[in-house]
Length: 390
Image 1 (cartoon, rainbow, N blue to C red):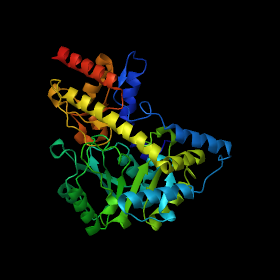
Image 2: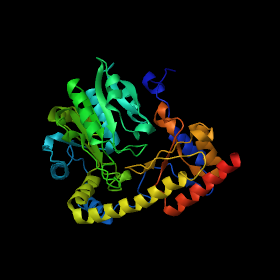
Image 3: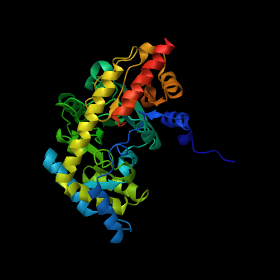
Image 4: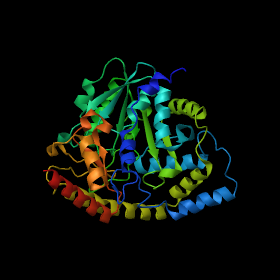
């Protein structure tokens, strides 16, 4: 029998799934591993009602490949009002979640042998998506000492004649870091100087805490070479609806659309109608978003402060998203050993930090979408297990 494709063999299966498999059937398990706001905040009812009505009205057929014009108009209006950016209807493509948008951008822009700079640690799907397109992922180390932000000088040092693109994700999954505007400006200048694309994953743009500010990368004089990817999953609490989008110049969006056309054809029609309602009904959405952010802020502080009271763990306060990235090196355990110990003994799920890159070793990702009560209980269990270990 012939073998499966080598490009698939080279991709390591997700260790996140391994953690969840270990947790299956464990009674009383508490998950700090999931990155899904829906269990805590269901999709707003006005969005669900609009989608239900759309189904009753016959929105069961394909939408246009680029997505419904009204949804693209709403997205264009958002970026004009919030960031002062101008996009046209043919510069927006609605996709099956942000994941597809990222995949399509890689397929549309990367040729075999092209190098793509990716922070380490960063979301685990970026390197495989580059590899699937025939590109070469080049990791740029980021560190806790720099609050898990990309140092422009470190990025500059990784550039070669083969470098074609930079992938950034801020606010970050897995670290919760938010890039400083000055550093993003320096990276924008690097991209301009070396004629590079930037694929900017901004799915957590609204999940920002304290006085921190999200900077949309396309506002920094490089809109023509930036592909902004966003989603309704996180900030509208619509993870299972699978609607995301990409914004870029017409040439890039046309290439993305061709790839999308040959892949998923179009995003879910009734789900797009729900998204339109979510964007149009600004008052209801802003009330929902404010409530969600305030609740996540409480959970963020509870989790970080709790980690920092446990011997062997210290944790930076994340500035965005809904993840913490605690340092567990003083426990003497590897990221996998720590995560497996916590599942089997504490009945708490966390994700090994090295799933997000080699420089994530010695850390774990812990989400704070769990309830406040669950977070408090998880911290007690973690503390008890580590005290017994020592």
